[in-house]
Length: 153
Image (cartoon, rainbow, N blue to C red):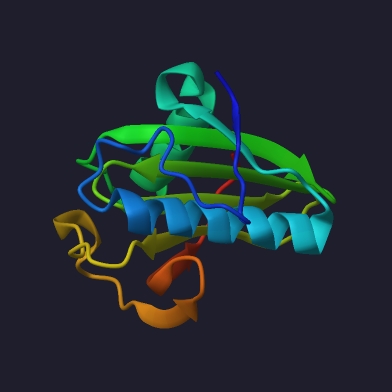
C-alpha cells in the first residue's frame, strides 16, 4: 500500500524493522521535503515487494556500472518522473538510501546517489566510496556519495 511521506511529522511507518528506523525515517522525510519544495512533487513510497521494478532497475544499474550488489534487504521503494528526470529511490533495512537520477534527454545528468542514515556503518560493498557529511533537521547527520552513470538504462 503506497505511503505519502510526511516531512512535517516524521514517521517510521514501513521502516520499523531497521535498527536505525528513526534516522532512516528522517532521511526519507528529508527527501520528501526536497521534492515538495523543488518540484512540488508528493513523495510516495511503497513496500519494496510492491515496487519490484524500481528495486530491480536500481540493482541492475549498480551491478552493471560498478559490480555492486547490496546485501541489505530493501524495505521501501519509489519511482517517478519530474521535469524530464526519471527518479528511483530504495530504502534499505540497514539505513542505506540509494537513488538514481536519470535525465531522459540525451547527454543529461545521470547518477546514483548513496545516503547513509545517522548511526549506521558504511556497508562493505560501499567502502571504496568517500562520503561527505551534511546536517539535516529531519535526519541528523547524513553521509552521502555518488557516481556518474555511463551507460544507457
